[in-house]
Length: 297
Ligand SMILES: [Mn+2]
Image (cartoon, rainbow, N blue to C red):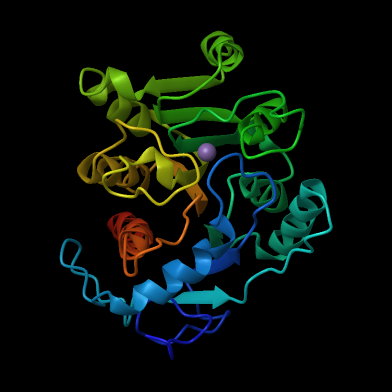
Protein backbone atom coordinates (compact mmCIF):
# COMPACT_ATOMS: atom_id res chain seq x y z
CA UNK A 1 0.00 0.00 0.00
CA UNK A 2 2.85 2.39 0.78
CA UNK A 3 4.18 2.14 -2.74
CA UNK A 4 0.91 3.12 -4.41
CA UNK A 5 1.67 5.90 -6.94
CA UNK A 6 0.96 9.50 -5.92
CA UNK A 7 -1.36 10.53 -8.71
CA UNK A 8 -3.42 7.47 -9.43
CA UNK A 9 -7.00 6.38 -8.76
CA UNK A 10 -7.64 2.60 -8.65
CA UNK A 11 -4.96 -0.03 -9.30
CA UNK A 12 -4.44 0.87 -12.95
CA UNK A 13 -2.04 3.50 -14.34
CA UNK A 14 -3.35 7.04 -14.62
CA UNK A 15 -4.35 7.94 -18.21
CA UNK A 16 -2.56 10.79 -19.95
CA UNK A 17 -4.33 14.14 -19.78
CA UNK A 18 -5.17 14.10 -23.49
CA UNK A 19 -6.55 10.53 -23.53
CA UNK A 20 -8.62 10.85 -20.35
CA UNK A 21 -12.43 10.80 -20.13
CA UNK A 22 -12.19 12.25 -16.63
CA UNK A 23 -9.74 14.70 -15.11
CA UNK A 24 -9.50 14.12 -11.38
CA UNK A 25 -8.15 17.08 -9.44
CA UNK A 26 -6.87 16.83 -5.88
CA UNK A 27 -7.94 19.85 -3.84
CA UNK A 28 -6.59 19.41 -0.28
CA UNK A 29 -8.22 22.66 0.86
CA UNK A 30 -8.64 23.19 4.59
CA UNK A 31 -9.06 26.78 5.69
CA UNK A 32 -12.32 27.25 7.59
CA UNK A 33 -13.27 23.96 9.25
CA UNK A 34 -15.57 24.55 12.20
CA UNK A 35 -15.40 21.25 14.12
CA UNK A 36 -13.29 18.21 13.18
CA UNK A 37 -10.11 18.80 11.19
CA UNK A 38 -8.29 16.80 8.54
CA UNK A 39 -10.08 17.44 5.23
CA UNK A 40 -6.76 18.41 3.66
CA UNK A 41 -5.80 14.72 3.89
CA UNK A 42 -8.96 13.61 2.08
CA UNK A 43 -7.76 13.37 -1.52
CA UNK A 44 -4.61 11.45 -0.58
CA UNK A 45 -6.52 8.94 1.60
CA UNK A 46 -9.13 8.32 -1.09
CA UNK A 47 -6.53 7.71 -3.80
CA UNK A 48 -4.44 5.53 -1.51
CA UNK A 49 -7.36 3.32 -0.45
CA UNK A 50 -8.60 3.05 -4.05
CA UNK A 51 -5.62 0.71 -4.59
CA UNK A 52 -7.71 -1.96 -2.85
CA UNK A 53 -10.74 -1.74 -5.16
CA UNK A 54 -11.45 -4.28 -7.89
CA UNK A 55 -11.20 -2.76 -11.36
CA UNK A 56 -14.25 -4.74 -12.43
CA UNK A 57 -17.39 -2.91 -11.32
CA UNK A 58 -19.97 -5.59 -10.73
CA UNK A 59 -23.11 -3.47 -11.03
CA UNK A 60 -22.34 -1.71 -14.31
CA UNK A 61 -20.07 -4.39 -15.77
CA UNK A 62 -17.41 -1.76 -16.43
CA UNK A 63 -13.74 -2.65 -16.32
CA UNK A 64 -11.91 0.45 -15.14
CA UNK A 65 -8.74 -0.85 -16.69
CA UNK A 66 -10.25 0.28 -19.99
CA UNK A 67 -13.12 2.65 -19.30
CA UNK A 68 -13.51 5.34 -18.15
CA UNK A 69 -9.94 6.60 -18.55
CA UNK A 70 -8.97 8.71 -15.56
CA UNK A 71 -6.20 11.24 -15.37
CA UNK A 72 -5.26 12.28 -11.84
CA UNK A 73 -3.60 15.69 -11.72
CA UNK A 74 -1.02 16.39 -8.97
CA UNK A 75 -2.52 18.04 -5.88
CA UNK A 76 -2.91 21.80 -5.82
CA UNK A 77 -0.71 23.35 -3.14
CA UNK A 78 -2.35 26.02 -1.03
CA UNK A 79 -0.24 28.54 0.85
CA UNK A 80 -1.28 28.23 4.53
CA UNK A 81 -0.66 31.96 5.06
CA UNK A 82 -3.09 32.96 2.29
CA UNK A 83 -6.82 33.56 2.74
CA UNK A 84 -9.58 31.23 1.61
CA UNK A 85 -10.56 33.76 -1.04
CA UNK A 86 -7.05 33.62 -2.50
CA UNK A 87 -7.14 29.82 -2.50
CA UNK A 88 -10.51 29.85 -4.29
CA UNK A 89 -9.00 32.16 -6.92
CA UNK A 90 -6.18 29.66 -7.33
CA UNK A 91 -8.68 26.84 -7.89
CA UNK A 92 -10.63 28.99 -10.36
CA UNK A 93 -7.50 29.74 -12.39
CA UNK A 94 -6.52 26.06 -12.37
CA UNK A 95 -9.97 25.00 -13.62
CA UNK A 96 -10.29 27.51 -16.43
CA UNK A 97 -8.18 25.57 -18.98
CA UNK A 98 -10.17 22.42 -18.10
CA UNK A 99 -13.42 23.73 -19.62
CA UNK A 100 -14.88 21.10 -21.90
CA UNK A 101 -13.39 18.25 -19.85
CA UNK A 102 -15.28 16.31 -17.18
CA UNK A 103 -13.64 17.48 -13.96
CA UNK A 104 -13.89 15.46 -10.76
CA UNK A 105 -12.65 17.50 -7.79
CA UNK A 106 -11.55 15.60 -4.69
CA UNK A 107 -11.63 17.71 -1.52
CA UNK A 108 -10.97 19.23 0.78
CA UNK A 109 -13.53 21.52 2.39
CA UNK A 110 -16.78 22.41 0.68
CA UNK A 111 -15.77 25.99 -0.17
CA UNK A 112 -13.78 24.61 -3.10
CA UNK A 113 -17.04 24.20 -5.05
CA UNK A 114 -17.03 27.98 -5.57
CA UNK A 115 -13.54 27.99 -7.08
CA UNK A 116 -14.26 25.00 -9.30
CA UNK A 117 -17.59 26.23 -10.58
CA UNK A 118 -16.45 29.79 -11.28
CA UNK A 119 -13.41 28.39 -13.09
CA UNK A 120 -15.50 26.14 -15.32
CA UNK A 121 -18.33 28.62 -16.07
CA UNK A 122 -18.57 32.39 -16.54
CA UNK A 123 -22.33 32.71 -16.23
CA UNK A 124 -23.74 30.67 -13.33
CA UNK A 125 -27.37 31.60 -14.00
CA UNK A 126 -27.88 28.59 -16.23
CA UNK A 127 -26.21 26.13 -13.82
CA UNK A 128 -28.07 23.86 -11.41
CA UNK A 129 -26.07 22.64 -8.44
CA UNK A 130 -27.25 19.22 -7.25
CA UNK A 131 -26.04 19.11 -3.66
CA UNK A 132 -26.07 15.99 -1.52
CA UNK A 133 -25.31 17.31 1.94
CA UNK A 134 -26.30 17.32 5.61
CA UNK A 135 -25.94 21.12 5.65
CA UNK A 136 -27.52 23.73 3.42
CA UNK A 137 -24.32 25.85 3.44
CA UNK A 138 -26.52 28.90 2.78
CA UNK A 139 -25.39 31.11 5.68
CA UNK A 140 -24.50 34.69 4.80
CA UNK A 141 -21.59 34.60 7.25
CA UNK A 142 -20.24 31.88 9.52
CA UNK A 143 -18.15 32.85 12.54
CA UNK A 144 -18.02 36.35 11.03
CA UNK A 145 -16.61 35.04 7.76
CA UNK A 146 -18.16 35.71 4.35
CA UNK A 147 -16.06 32.94 2.81
CA UNK A 148 -16.43 29.59 4.53
CA UNK A 149 -17.51 26.01 3.95
CA UNK A 150 -20.81 27.03 5.57
CA UNK A 151 -21.48 29.98 3.23
CA UNK A 152 -20.38 28.52 -0.10
CA UNK A 153 -23.86 27.83 -1.50
CA UNK A 154 -25.03 31.31 -0.46
CA UNK A 155 -22.19 32.85 -2.48
CA UNK A 156 -23.11 30.69 -5.48
CA UNK A 157 -26.80 31.49 -5.03
CA UNK A 158 -25.90 35.19 -5.18
CA UNK A 159 -24.23 34.50 -8.52
CA UNK A 160 -27.51 33.11 -9.88
CA UNK A 161 -27.16 29.32 -9.49
CA UNK A 162 -30.18 27.09 -9.06
CA UNK A 163 -30.07 24.41 -6.37
CA UNK A 164 -31.43 20.97 -5.76
CA UNK A 165 -30.41 20.19 -2.16
CA UNK A 166 -30.89 16.65 -0.89
CA UNK A 167 -30.55 15.21 2.60
CA UNK A 168 -30.36 18.49 4.53
CA UNK A 169 -30.66 18.12 8.32
CA UNK A 170 -28.73 21.03 9.80
CA UNK A 171 -29.30 24.71 9.03
CA UNK A 172 -30.00 28.00 10.79
CA UNK A 173 -33.35 29.78 10.74
CA UNK A 174 -31.81 32.34 8.39
CA UNK A 175 -30.80 29.61 5.94
CA UNK A 176 -34.23 28.04 6.29
CA UNK A 177 -35.82 31.37 5.27
CA UNK A 178 -33.55 31.73 2.23
CA UNK A 179 -34.24 28.18 1.11
CA UNK A 180 -37.99 28.40 1.56
CA UNK A 181 -38.44 31.78 -0.13
CA UNK A 182 -36.09 31.45 -3.11
CA UNK A 183 -37.62 30.03 -6.29
CA UNK A 184 -34.12 28.91 -7.30
CA UNK A 185 -33.75 26.50 -4.38
CA UNK A 186 -35.47 23.13 -4.10
CA UNK A 187 -34.61 21.51 -0.79
CA UNK A 188 -35.43 18.03 0.49
CA UNK A 189 -34.89 17.54 4.21
CA UNK A 190 -33.66 14.16 5.43
CA UNK A 191 -36.56 13.88 7.90
CA UNK A 192 -38.98 13.95 4.94
CA UNK A 193 -37.58 10.67 3.62
CA UNK A 194 -38.88 8.19 2.71
CA UNK A 195 -42.23 9.96 2.20
CA UNK A 196 -40.85 12.47 -0.32
CA UNK A 197 -38.25 10.18 -1.87
CA UNK A 198 -40.21 9.70 -5.12
CA UNK A 199 -40.28 13.52 -5.45
CA UNK A 200 -36.50 13.64 -5.10
CA UNK A 201 -36.13 11.22 -7.99
CA UNK A 202 -38.73 13.12 -10.02
CA UNK A 203 -36.81 16.39 -9.44
CA UNK A 204 -33.66 14.73 -10.76
CA UNK A 205 -35.55 13.50 -13.84
CA UNK A 206 -36.87 17.02 -14.50
CA UNK A 207 -33.46 18.70 -14.50
CA UNK A 208 -32.35 20.37 -17.70
CA UNK A 209 -29.27 22.28 -18.81
CA UNK A 210 -25.91 22.48 -17.12
CA UNK A 211 -25.53 20.49 -13.92
CA UNK A 212 -22.77 20.53 -11.33
CA UNK A 213 -23.07 17.70 -8.81
CA UNK A 214 -21.49 18.31 -5.42
CA UNK A 215 -21.28 15.38 -3.08
CA UNK A 216 -20.56 16.28 0.52
CA UNK A 217 -19.80 12.96 2.20
CA UNK A 218 -21.63 14.12 5.34
CA UNK A 219 -24.81 13.86 3.27
CA UNK A 220 -24.51 10.10 3.67
CA UNK A 221 -25.47 8.52 6.95
CA UNK A 222 -22.55 8.62 9.41
CA UNK A 223 -22.87 4.86 9.81
CA UNK A 224 -21.37 4.75 6.28
CA UNK A 225 -18.87 7.61 6.54
CA UNK A 226 -18.40 8.85 10.12
CA UNK A 227 -15.08 10.34 9.06
CA UNK A 228 -16.07 13.89 8.16
CA UNK A 229 -15.70 17.32 9.79
CA UNK A 230 -19.30 17.80 10.96
CA UNK A 231 -21.28 14.53 10.90
CA UNK A 232 -25.07 14.53 11.39
CA UNK A 233 -27.34 11.54 12.05
CA UNK A 234 -30.12 10.34 9.72
CA UNK A 235 -28.29 10.70 6.42
CA UNK A 236 -28.81 9.00 3.09
CA UNK A 237 -28.36 5.25 2.85
CA UNK A 238 -25.90 3.84 0.34
CA UNK A 239 -28.81 2.80 -1.89
CA UNK A 240 -30.42 6.26 -1.76
CA UNK A 241 -27.06 7.83 -2.58
CA UNK A 242 -26.71 5.51 -5.58
CA UNK A 243 -30.23 6.50 -6.70
CA UNK A 244 -29.28 10.18 -6.62
CA UNK A 245 -26.07 9.63 -8.59
CA UNK A 246 -27.94 7.50 -11.13
CA UNK A 247 -30.67 10.12 -11.33
CA UNK A 248 -28.06 12.63 -12.46
CA UNK A 249 -26.20 10.19 -14.70
CA UNK A 250 -29.27 8.85 -16.51
CA UNK A 251 -30.95 12.18 -17.26
CA UNK A 252 -30.50 12.73 -21.02
CA UNK A 253 -31.57 16.40 -20.88
CA UNK A 254 -28.66 17.65 -18.81
CA UNK A 255 -25.06 18.53 -19.44
CA UNK A 256 -23.41 17.13 -16.33
CA UNK A 257 -20.05 18.83 -16.67
CA UNK A 258 -18.38 18.39 -13.29
CA UNK A 259 -18.56 16.86 -9.84
CA UNK A 260 -16.80 17.23 -6.58
CA UNK A 261 -16.63 15.06 -3.49
CA UNK A 262 -15.82 17.03 -0.35
CA UNK A 263 -15.36 17.06 3.43
CA UNK A 264 -13.88 13.59 3.73
CA UNK A 265 -11.41 13.21 6.59
CA UNK A 266 -9.04 10.21 6.55
CA UNK A 267 -10.16 7.66 9.11
CA UNK A 268 -7.99 7.34 12.19
CA UNK A 269 -8.16 3.55 12.01
CA UNK A 270 -6.90 2.33 8.66
CA UNK A 271 -8.46 1.22 6.46
CA UNK A 272 -11.55 2.72 8.17
CA UNK A 273 -14.00 4.23 5.76
CA UNK A 274 -11.43 5.59 3.29
CA UNK A 275 -12.33 2.72 1.03
CA UNK A 276 -16.04 3.54 1.27
CA UNK A 277 -15.26 7.07 0.10
CA UNK A 278 -13.10 5.76 -2.74
CA UNK A 279 -15.85 3.35 -3.75
CA UNK A 280 -18.31 6.25 -3.77
CA UNK A 281 -16.07 8.15 -6.20
CA UNK A 282 -15.84 5.06 -8.39
CA UNK A 283 -19.64 4.69 -8.45
CA UNK A 284 -20.03 8.29 -9.64
CA UNK A 285 -17.70 7.58 -12.55
CA UNK A 286 -19.28 4.19 -13.31
CA UNK A 287 -22.84 5.54 -13.50
CA UNK A 288 -21.72 8.52 -15.53
CA UNK A 289 -20.01 6.23 -18.04
CA UNK A 290 -23.10 4.05 -18.39
CA UNK A 291 -25.30 7.16 -18.71
CA UNK A 292 -23.14 8.43 -21.55
CA UNK A 293 -23.14 5.05 -23.24
CA UNK A 294 -26.93 4.84 -23.09
CA UNK A 295 -27.11 8.19 -24.85
CA UNK A 296 -24.74 6.99 -27.54
CA UNK A 297 -21.94 9.32 -26.50
MN1 LIG B 1 -21.43 20.97 2.70
